[in-house]
Length: 266
Ligand SMILES: NC(=O)c1ccc[n+]([C@@H]2O[C@H](COP(=O)([O-])OP(=O)(O)OC[C@H]3O[C@@H](n4cnc5c(N)ncnc54)[C@H](OP(=O)(O)O)[C@@H]3O)[C@@H](O)[C@H]2O)c1
Image (tube, rainbow, N blue to C red):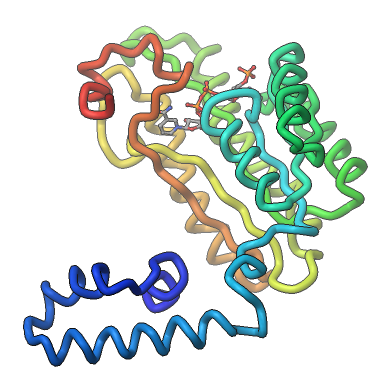
């Protein structure tokens, strides 16, 4: 796995080689040997399966569902996947914002993006969303990104039962249920099978005041990722999780800087 990261994600330039090597192998001869090996690796990867790097990173022909794409991180994910050639469906609760995003994407030439309105915290909405996805993407789904999420920032003692239910349903139950609904399509994908990406949070592993519910859902999402990855490997479905630190989006706009250490991210 680390060999793949080294060869594909990081270009084996001299500076990188020197940087890596200076930690482990101080001699010049050893550095030159590593560069030689890296160049050979680069060549063999460049011709892997007879495809160029650009072709290997293309998502042309792939289909994706990204929840919560009207703004923030989900919006960027939609744009990136569509920019790489995938057909992408996304949703949010606010129809006007979703349509506005759709219009701006079309202006940028990203015409393979479709949108719909869905509250992922509601079971019936999730079922309708998957029906729309099947219809729009011709019964084909290669990538599911469970991104939509919410944060209610308050002391643990003050959450109501309704707030507890809403945060759980939006951040955790929705991911589990959408995985269930997507499983037949993800397993049916040709080639390498499907891919699920969960957007967790650094708060899944660190305790922050006033984020008890949010953190609990994200911790659950991490474990859901591990469990499904183990269970669905047989179906050739990869399940992974990204746990970002603080990113300036609407979600955190009312959270005090001291709580999120935003001062480090200006
Ligand atoms: N920003 C950060 O610092 C940070 C750090 C780590 C992880 N994350 C995670 O990253 C993900 C995206 O967060 P963000 O910062 O991009 O938030 P954001 O800017 O508030 O965007 C959230 C997106 O999800 C949608 N959404 C929220 N609740 C939904 C629901 N019930 N049904 C359907 N769509 C819903 C929102 O649209 P509507 O409200 O119109 O529905 C919006 O499109 C979340 O899972 C969050 O926990 C964020």
